[in-house]
Length: 333
Image (cartoon, rainbow, N blue to C red; front, side, top):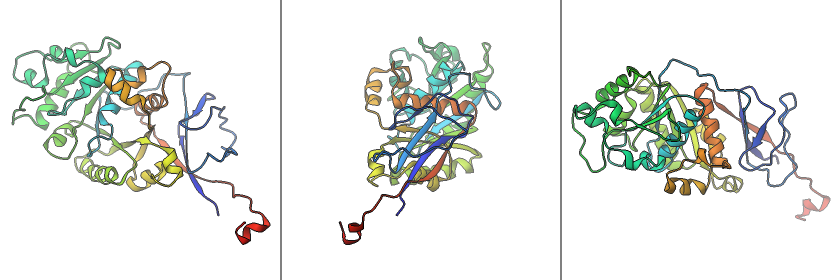
């Protein structure tokens, strides 16, 4: 019997430099030759193939600013980690980025970026007239084209009047800045589908849905997809986070292809499980800044690349070679 494995490949023009992430060894990629399954017993069920493109800068697609909300519905799947790493990756590619932490009660984006000690003013104080917008924007010292804006401070009650219209005003103010309009405005959405979720998605025209390959996360992601489409957001791509191929091989976790077939969304990136995520979070130092880079950091960089060009990955089914069976196998040998 043939068994199936899921291979993820880019739809963009390939480059001779490539890596197999996260579980196969590097090899040259030739677009004229079809991909062959390595004769390796560990190559089963799932292989992630990604192409590194170092010979050119990505071309910005669409009208600026691109207002992108990063959401999931379920908490703890990696929305804030994705926002921090994708945002800094965009800045490293040369684009101006403003990241808005729209999670009012559980603000964490400043911690992941290592900017928690520099948050003196927030968007609420800008709306109250207590400070200017440029005073509430925190510029990253490592990459000056990356800025952070928090909606409010932890343990502070958000005014009832603050909603989707107020966030639209903040986005419009960023567009009309004297120093220029940013290329990307990324909104870190809170968990759930209550008022905070509605506020965060209101000014967005694109969405990145972060999910993990488990049924609870997928159910919430499917629900959020419907709400985004009802709000008029049609450009929705997903990031599958915390992928473990050892569990996929043992059929204890759904493959990336299964996730894509269930949700029916374009695939922006696949992030492997990486213990370095915990270390980087505690240090306030995003994965994409690590030297040497980790597999998860490289995956976030590639997701940012595709986001710039409004590109996606593609899931393909590959049949493995059948195992050779001897004469005595018919008798159970």
